[in-house]
Length: 221
Image (cartoon, rainbow, N blue to C red):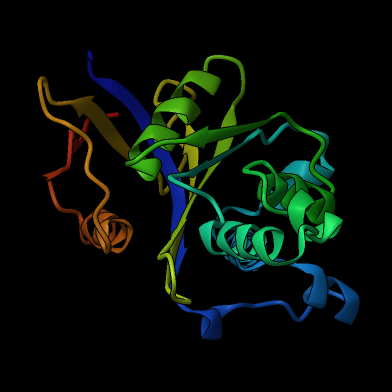
């Protein structure tokens, strides 16, 4: 795969339920939201402070959303399968929230975002989500990429959000140019902690690093 290049305007992550920021939501919404939706809403709220996404949306501009995950809410799916085996019945609400595009759709409703949504299932969800976001930059000024993965049988999860822009779109102040390429002949491997490492490297200004089948490096705008 040839190298792709984009600008990261803002990024943040949520790695524990204690980090959720849901004060603006109604009690009903808080009860209804899944773990991934709570993480996505928290990330959106934080990114709003960094690059004012709310103003971007209220001005009528598009903010398409890419949601990338290896297996989505795998613990919810496991519970549904257990219920189906034991009783032959599953909750329609829980089933509807188990599909991969439920999280970005829920976030779009909560934030009044009527832009396009793309759901991506991939082993290295963050890197493949960034590739999907890069493709969408061919049509849109900004793209929000959310990557979420959880550990089966536990409450552990990793969630990262990144706002992308085209490097040739006018040099947005504060943006960081990044190039992403896939290493030939290397298989993708899911690795816990990879998302936190990506953010740490990005925020520390590390020049280049490898993540599974991908190579990431800082680039000139």
